[in-house]
Length: 221
Image (cartoon, rainbow, N blue to C red):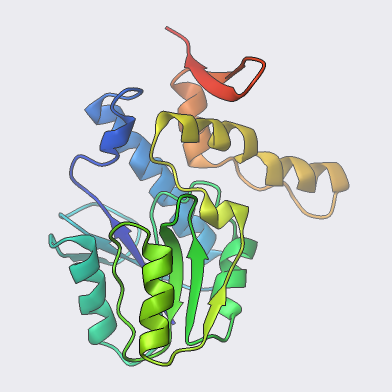
């Protein structure tokens, strides 16, 4: 199985502009990408990047500056083997979560994101193609049905959480270290290394703040 990670190498994460400068958004995107690549590798698979521009990365890089749908469909059309498409901003993803995705047998396996997007999928049916516009989860269910592909859906909080907006940063601060803390507390395994995305946010001065209704983030000046 090929594991392809699309990556916006130029001006990433524009919806975080209210929280981060352009240079900070690039650095944070790189930290999330490193976490995703590490989690994929921990499943025993080697990820490859599908980047919009040349980028230095610890993985093979293919540059394709077309829109996401076109670039991914070109990958699906060029191979007969199963292809996993994993977004680069899944800062909470773990090897176990990716294992749930990779090991399902469906012709199309989908991990939906919050709000109706598609954060990760596996395409085994040769005629299936993606469409990442709008509520792509529903579009992908329909596309799989059209080509007669059996669909499985992976319900995973860690795969459903992509980081696009300021409010999403709280999820990284809350859950980014929970796996390591759990392993340490139970002594079931050695604690995992701290996520680079969590380390980056903490080093940049972000912390949790809450009122009576919800949790958000604040930043030290």
